Image (cartoon, rainbow, N blue to C red; front, side, top):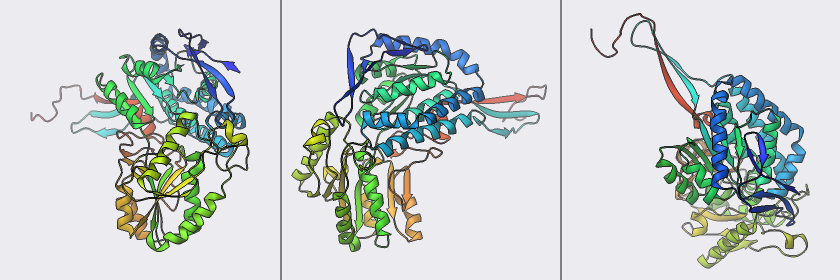
Length: 491
């Protein structure tokens, strides 16, 4: 078992705190590593290091920054099996998904590395002769990245890679549930040749480490992925300093099955969307909305398939569903299951904490399906676990009405062979992402990721939009007329 410290100015060092916490395997309860409960003083040292490294890193050519990212991606590729296993051991997702997360991280870091040869601005003509206009992208400065536990390597890469390629220096705080994955990622970037001070890593609580990152005036921008209450708190605190803040705060994602859908395909999509990663994705399918004419057929097949899912040690490649990530998450999910029962929702499948054998050491909840009425709490709130609420719709319009009537707007899905309905759904569904004949999960790294309503505040990650999150636009005017020209003023 390794004892980690903080990572500041290119070195691992002891925290100013004497307190530590453990990160544990949610399947076995085994302690994997220990980390310090960081302090304000640790954060201040990290910020000073980032400030010191910033001038040189800004001047470092962007294509050369891209070469460092490419080396990091190559190291991840060489160690994909090992890193995937670490994700599975610390977070609990099935091993195929753990390796898939590493592949996502590789893909995105490679993609962003190429942006080092672009970082595109625009050129545009002037209204005056012998005058030239263009825009260039410049780094914001020292940025704070606060990441979640459910994608402990991919989401940090979604933030780290664009922040670094744009020339920013970074203070990185991972979720306390999965710090080992984050630490291994830092080690990879160090090995890839990142200069000292460019990336700094502090573990600890949101109330201490996170708050200092958010409220310290030397940190110029914040990127956060997590829950709505925390996101609102970060936004309100950072706004007092006029900081740029980018938030990705979750979803309550609908999966619509129309009467003309490919039923087998639609059910496969529901199973993967609702119960992959034990439902612990912001894009997970939370609500299944089925056309009344095929409701019975779909439910019969769905329940049979759900009951057949294999639940157990996620390192076993035959397992479909692993544990939820912690005792706290387990309690929240079980509390929501009780709420559903108390509201009068009909429990059709699952609903229990599993016990006996391996289950006694970990946090295993059966994949759970409720037959619910729209408006119940279990249909309106985000349940971050393997719980699916099913509702019946009269027609397309009714399905869309139910789908849209929540506070979130991240992902959405509709299964239909009707091309007209598919294009109407693209227009009508209130979400940042809409899938046609595919589940609500499955984002690809070259496309913008994010949502509307309480899902966030308008920003997007991934794709070229990721660069926008970490750059300022400078407009440049070059007048080579050798005389004073007055725009908009008649001479």
